[in-house]
Image 1 (cartoon, rainbow, N blue to C red):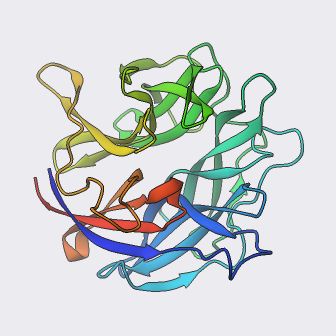
Image 2 (image 1 turned 135 degrees about the vertical axis):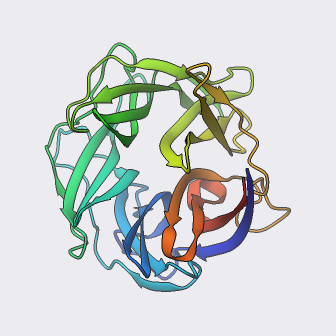
Amino acid sequence: MQWEKLGMIYCRNPLENQNSWWRSHTLAPTAIQLNKLEIRIYVGGLDEKGISRIGSIDVDAQNPLHIIRISKYPVLDIGRAGTFDENGVFPAHAYLMDDEVRLYYTGFQLGFQVPHFNFGGLAIGGKEENNLVRHSQAPIMDRADEGLSVRAGQSILPTNEGYEVAYSAGSTWVETGGKLRPCYDIYMQNSMDGLVISPFGNRIIEHNPLIEHGLGRPQIIKLGNNKYIFYTRRMLGMKYFFGYAHFDQSLNKWERIDNITGLDHSANGFDSEMVYFPSVLEVPLFNKTYIFYSGNNFGESGLGVGVKVSN
């Protein structure tokens, strides 16, 4: 799979937004095609305390480096006190279903003996409103034995019988980059409606503990006749990379590939140390497949985009 980087779309300047709900970062982008000519990219933005809320950036579908508008207010704010997302929210994956946006997201709650917990929520709204409402105050993907600390980053793929759901889950931690970091693998299960998710899934892709501490925010997607899962390889050296897996129909299993040509770290610039949180979007009108991602330091240095040039 061959890709070509197009460049940086946007970098939030903390000096210009010192008292803002969105002071810095473009965390965890996920994109939908708002209409034939516009793409909406949901991102997490940090305030001065490092707490994330979800905003949006709309770009030209033919030239995604051209920004059309940026949200002035949070698309989704943090949750009420005591809830799973009281200490921050950022996007998992967004989908446009008819005229309704379904935004799966990850919520953060601080821990005591571990730094935090991550569980999965859902917000829904009209595509023109840019204002999403929680499906529930509780997570739709909560703590379970397969994921006591992390069970989030969910994405869905429609099937004849409902949806396939891919997500990250794990219960252990490792110290790297000066902090405790969660360890997790990629799981999958089926859901009738994408709203009710069982506490039990099948682990389909495992991280390599010798070089990685987790495989983050998997996006399950069909490109042509092939199914893929794109994810972030959270490396122990903190220089994160993209990874992906292909579903081998003959073996009925996911084959981990990882090498995405053209999307490694740049020699210098905003994505020289980290490419993080891939979100793939097809734009049929222009026969393009884009990949949106966060750059260095979890998107502090900017939001980038690439385009697929060959299979």
